[in-house]
Length: 148
Image (cartoon, rainbow, N blue to C red; front, side, top):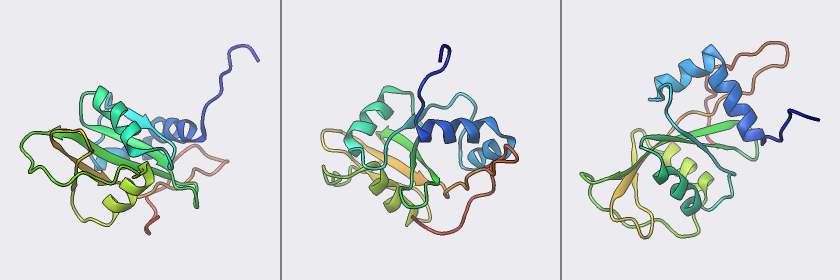
């Protein structure tokens, strides 16, 4: 169809979250601000690939993916390349986007991590998963308790 383009399920859910008052409120409670970049990645995508996109943007950035089991939207707040942080061991090169979200979700505060080849450590904070909007109204529910 003319004027239409293919969008991933992640892109659709991010657009719905950012497009709804309730979704924006939840994101803002966790540090998101209007104009802040959102990088979208598949849950099994190598974290190194996603971090290459994150580093292109002015930090901080939200990294969005879907939990493959629940299909709920997962956001990780990332501040990349923080010179003032202690340089920590680099993550496993086989880490995925979902691995970072799951690890960060286990922390009460920000998680410090570093990618191979990066001189500085970065910070990650997992936001609670967002519920999928109901079809009969266009608003995001409050975060769902429970991990991936």
